Length: 125
Image 1: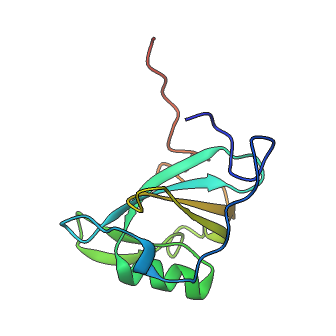
Image 2 (image 1 turned 180 degrees about the horizontal axis):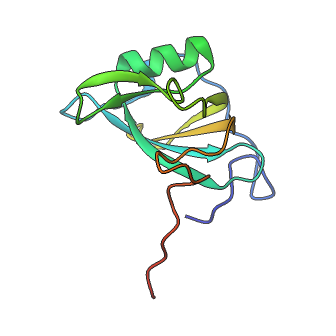
């Protein structure tokens, strides 16, 4: 992954498709991974999972909603922390089995630890 968002210097922005989950290929568990990216800096903030209902709510409210695999329930990002995410765009990959959610991050950060991003550790290569 190059770290560039669609629509930047690498090429044209993808055509908008009708809103809804009909273009998304949810897995056998009913979930699809969603990479959350800062809409301005393109920094990857977090990865979470969505089901059809959380995607529907995200598209309707323009706030991120996810499905918690451990709690088995929907949750709006930032409901308790105040670190909300305001959606500016949703991209679907070529196979329909992964999403990139472009957001404006409100508050101190996206990570449950309070950090701006969940991706703070680097492996040696």
